[in-house]
Length: 160
Image (cartoon, rainbow, N blue to C red):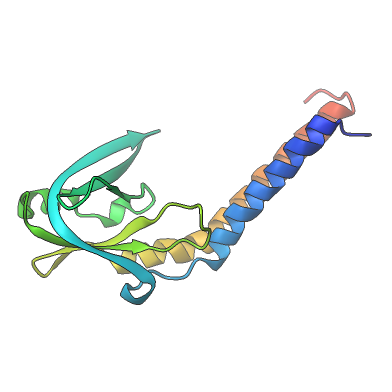
């Protein structure tokens, strides 16, 4: 059974992307103030996004037009309602952005503090990072094996 040139290219891209995602999950370090980028500024606004049933948040500061994203994976660690009740526009906030292993991966907010109160728990984020080290590679391996089995069975002409 030979693969066409296009199938080889897609297979190579697929393997590279899956390997990059797995390596990022396996080697991602915990979020700490020492290995995160600190951003201090004044709160401007917050937007909530819902993609495929998962909430994520974008925090905007008056000092920049950048959107500082709270990942949907970490949204359950964020006390959004308390944050909006306590933190008013113009109030100082401090964000810590987790540095991803891969240079092209976006930095996500791992901690939000204002007036001595933490609204995004870095301990909760670190629990999620630790859990993803195992779950994400195993899930991607399972999906990849299933996709390979379906592809191989279709190539041999068997119905699934």
